[in-house]
Image 1 (cartoon, rainbow, N blue to C red):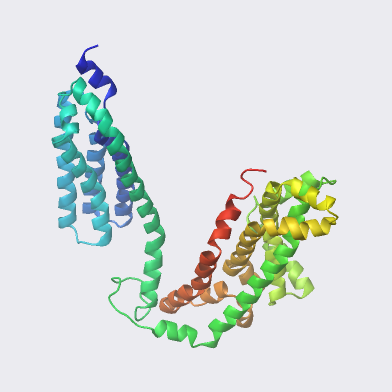
Image 2: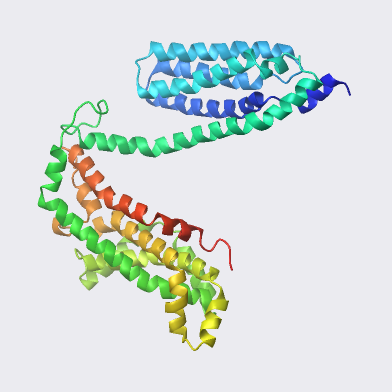
Amino acid sequence: MNGQGIAVRWYVPAEIQVLRVWLPVAALINAFIVGAEVLRAREHGMLLSVAGLAALLLLRALLPDGRLPWKRTAALALAAAGVLAGLWSLFAIELSFFNFWSNTWLVFPAGIALYWLSVGPAASWASGASDSAAAESGLARNKQVLPRLESFGLHTLLLHAIAVVIVPVIWIIDISFSPGNVLGGAIGDAFTLEHYESMLGGSQFWLWTRNSVIVAIGTTIVGLLLAIPAGYAFSRYDFAGRKGSMFVFMLVQMFPGAIILVPYFMVMKTLGLLNTSIGLIIAYSVTALPLCVWMLKGFFDSVPRALEEAALLDGCTQVEVFYRIVLPLSLPAVAMTALFSFLAAWNEFVLALVFNTSNESYTLPVGLASLIPTVGQQWGDFAAASVVVSIPVVIMFIAFQRALIQGLSAGAVKG
C-alpha cells in the first residue's frame, strides 16, 4: 500500500476527531435553545436558532474524510454560515446573558471548525495533501494534542453543569438583596438588607427554626438508634424472615410518599400527635429507616469478620465487639446516615404541612411556603429566609464532606 493510502487509512488529525464528537454536542444544545426560543415566543430568535442548528448538523455530516477534497470546501462554507448566523443573531437581538450564551454555542464551534479547516494539519489532511511522513508526524502529534482538547471539552461541560446549579442560587441571593418583591430585573442593580432585617427581626422565623432544629435533631437521633442495630443485624445474622424483611424495605421505597398521608394523619390524630414535634420525629424516622438500614448494612458488610472473631477470642462479648470494633470503623457511614436523616427532616414539606395546622408548630419549609400566598407574595423575604436556611446545610456538607465521601464509597468492595 502506498504512502497516501496509509495516511488516509490510519491518520485522522486530532482536530477532526474532536469536531466529530463536539459538533453533535453543540447541535444538541442548540436544539434545547430552539425549544427555549419557542417558549419565549421569539420568532426571530427561533428562526436564527433553527438555521444555526441546521448548519451544525450539516457541518458534521460533511466533515472531511481525507479522500474527498470537496468536503473541505463545503464544510468551510457551512462553518462560515454558522459564524455569520450567530453573529447576526447576537447583534440583531437585544443583548442579554441568555442570548450571548446561546449564540456562543453556535459561533464558537463553527468558528473553531472554520479555523481548523483553513490552516494547520487538519486543513492539509482535509485537502488530501497528506503523505506517509505527514501521517507519522500527525499520529505523534495527536498523542499530545488530543488529551488537551478532550480535557478542555470535559471542563466546558463541567462548567455548564456547575452553572445549572449556581445560576439559580445567584438569582435567589440577588432577589434577597433587591428592594421590593420583584422576581425579574438585572442582577446586582440594587442593594438592600430590608428583607433580612424583616425575617431575622421577627419572631416567626426563629419559631420555625426552633421547630425544625428540634425535629431534625430528634429524627437523626431516633433514626440512628433504630438503623444502626438493624443494619448490623441484617449484615451479620441469618434469622428467620431476613430476606423477606430486606425485600420489604426495598419495596416500600418504590411507592410515593403521598400514599401514606391519610394513614399517617389518622394514626397521628388518634394518638394526639398532631401539631407536635414528636409526631413529625416518629413519621420522619419511620420513613427514612429503610434507606438508612440499607446504607449501614452495606458498610457493615465491608468490615472484615476476622476482626470480630479476634475480639471474641480475646474475651469480648458480642456487644463489646460491636461498640469497640465495628462501630468505630463504621463512623463514616454513620456520619453519612446522620446527615441524610437530618437533611430529610430539615427539608421535608408535605408531612409537616399535613400534620401541622397552627403557625406555632410550623417547620421552616412550611413557614417559608406561607410567605407566598395567592396574592401579595413576599418574594424578597422568602429569598432572604431561603438563603439563611441553606447556610446550616452548606456548613454541614463542608464539615462532613470527608466522611460523606468515605460513606458513599463504603461497601463498594467487600473485605
